[in-house]
Length: 131
Image 1: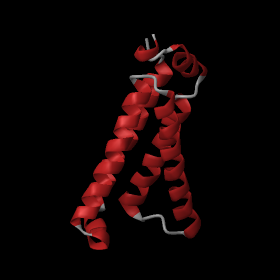
Image 2 (image 1 turned 180 degrees about the vertical axis):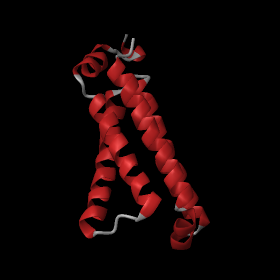
Image 3 (image 1 turned 90 degrees about the horizontal axis):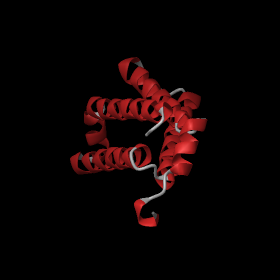
Image 4 (image 1 turned 135 degrees about the vertical axis):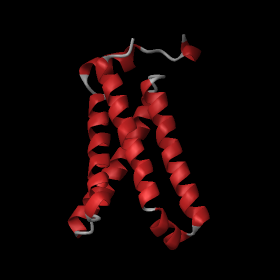
């Protein structure tokens, strides 16, 4: 059975994905103006799709590889956010608030996946192909 830290981490990270979708919708016109409809759609679908897949593999299949890839994606997100903060270019208003909330939810979600109970669950779960 999955520990509570894995369940809560999954829920919080899923919340960050929902905020990513909201941000993609809010920023759609700017993304289209920058790269065109096709590029904007492909980038959003690929990034969100990969993140959802990694979250599923991490929290439902106990994949340690997916966990570390999710950590890398989260680190890239944090770096981008900190770059915006350092450059004073964090979006004003709702977009900036949602960006901040999305980043924080991702961070807390990842941290929960490294709690002692979650680490034990990942270590105890053996993939079916090796059972």
